[in-house]
Image (tube, rainbow, N blue to C red; front, side, top):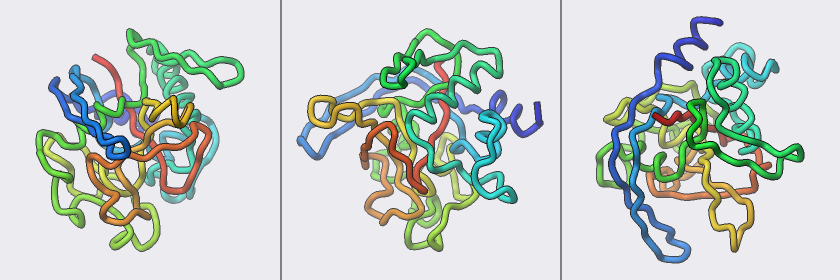
Length: 226
C-alpha cells in the first residue's frame, strides 16, 4: 500500500466529538434537532489518487492527484466505501442489491461510509453558530475565486476541528434520502462548490438529486463510526 493511501485511510481521520445540531428544511419551513454520536471524518474530500487506486481506474488529470474526485454518483460513492473497507480488512457498511436499487446500511459495521446529513452539518459548523465557519474567501473555493475550476484539496483554511473544504470546492454526498414521499430515492449533498455562488456555500444549504446523478463539482468525503 502506498504511503499516501495509508496516511489518508488509516491515520488522518478526525475524531468528531458527540453533540447535537439543529437542521432545517426551508422548503417546508421546519426544523429538527439531531443527536450526534462521536465519529470519524476525513479532513478532506476523497482525491482522484485515492479513488483511482481503489477502483483501479484512472479518474481526473493524471498530473493532479490531489484534486477531489468529481463526476461520481451517490451509488459510486457507496461502492467505493465498500471497496476501501474490504481493501483495509474492515467490515463493509453497505449491502447493495444486484440491480443497485436498494442499499442497506449496517450501522454496526466498522468500515468506511458516507456521513449522515446531520453529522456533516455538525462537523462543518465545528462549534460555531453562523452560516459559515469563517470568511468565505479564506475557507472556500467558489465562483468568485475559483477561476472556474476545481482545486487541490486542503489549500483553504480549515475549520476549528481541522476539516478542509467543508464549504466550496466540491459538493459532498451524504447518506440521507431528501424527502422520499416527494422526491423518491433522491439523496442529499452539502457544502457548495467551485461553481457555486456565495449564497450556496453555507453549513445549512441543502441540495438533492437522484443517486445516479454525476456532475463536475460533486464529490464525497469519508466517515467511520466509532
